[in-house]
Image (cartoon, rainbow, N blue to C red; front, side):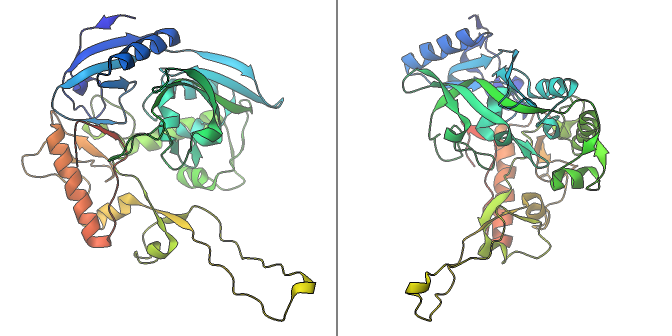
Length: 378
């Protein structure tokens, strides 16, 4: 459990911001990770766990605490719940895209559409990461969780994590603390054994993104290659030579709003209902029927709306930046706030606030940041 020489968090995060921490420790095994976290928590000092650093926006001031660098790795194969499935227990520090590549090589389906997402496996359930219709919640079985309050390590089923759209009980949302402060030590997924052959793709969102008809059959490897190419065109695959990838991915979440509010937005704004419309059925026992049928109860449905569309139609184009600022919107899509080269956290925060203000002024909706903010405010 070696203590290492601290480096600025700007060198450990994909947005390339953040000051120097007081202390840094690398944990290379699960036992080391558990021990160091218990020791740090016992001191009561500030702490920050960093895996791939792809979902962090850190302020410019020094971090007066300990940064725990999660460097664990490894995949253990376990029996699945059915003969055509397999479970993989993966260490928290394992690179997410390396895991996806491994599953495709093994002919295991369930996370191939999430190819190219940066970060580590332990962070995936916290954010309930997803892409093109696949989300971690669809394959997650359980996690090993180290609880900050008790220091206890336990196995927690996915159903207890409150997994929703880019959220869980473990996530520290902007302006609030996590419902359950804890750190994931390992993750167990259940995937389907489909092999290397071609098969039709069930998800309409994935088919649409890849230009596939409902009956077109493709292999897992074909999906991975084309998802990576699609993400690369959007600047969403990390590249040291491309400033469009120097970001935290999508900086703002697609907004979840009521169906009534969604109807106030322009019809052209992309919208995705989160639940199907169901005609209400009223059952009245014949003996109790008095000739009057009560009016149906209106169901309150929620709708996901495109933050990128809202930003663009609030007058902010791709590549927008303030004069002399080193922060700007990606030149490939407006959801990414990018560091164009040695931008400070203050410059990025200034741009983020301006985006929020423009969208709120135009559409009456305040976009919420997706990354975890540390020592910085919007």
